[in-house]
Image (tube, rainbow, N blue to C red; front, side, top):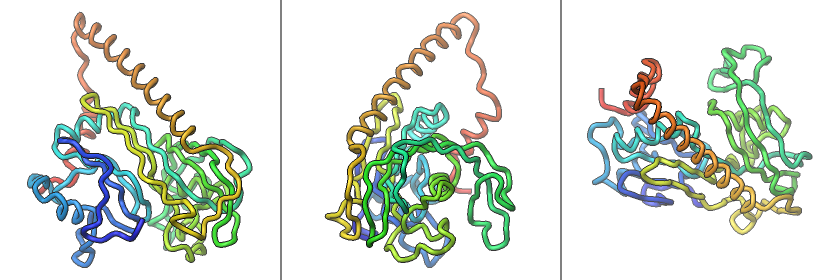
Length: 300
């Protein structure tokens, strides 16, 4: 995947309500800084000027976020109703996201659940960072869980690395980066969470590979092409396959289908109950969060 330019936006999925793009690494989603002219928003406006929503500040509503340094699948809602249906999926934990990464060292366990609570780092010079509970200056740590599956062992520029699939089960800022660093296997090229040492790779090796959003009206399910293959980066030399990526993704698809079936059963039972007792009101706090989420990027 080449560096981002204004006219090389890659589209993974498109419908009347959603677009899923393959975001470039080292690219901001949006920016109010005059000197940052290349953003994902500007790429979208260049490619789809007719789809920009004049009722929003930037023109497009993002259903979720990706870090500046992270590449891969990112979903964009093209109208407020679509954004609301996506929000409902995130709120009810029906969305499945999985990331590919190259991490330093050879991870010994084939699968693991990482459960460090993560908070904001308040130490001087580190306020842009997150940290695990127990770290000096760690403020308001919250429970976080990530699943890690080893795919391949190999080397990058001669150093031992492991290719892994990461699934965030919660959604804290920098969660995957912090969790990988906490287990002693920081992501290759992650300068911020490698104690400012890992600066040689041309990018941070974290890529949003798989995204599934079952909105009810349509199933959004995409895989963003794997950039961590030796044909695209000769510095990466895989040596031993532990688990096939296709098999692990199929597991996630099966889990997603099962979870959606359970949710449909709950909704059906809820409708029957509502028929006799009346539907319960959505809590005020929950409704306020939804309205704030939908209004993000709205003109003030």
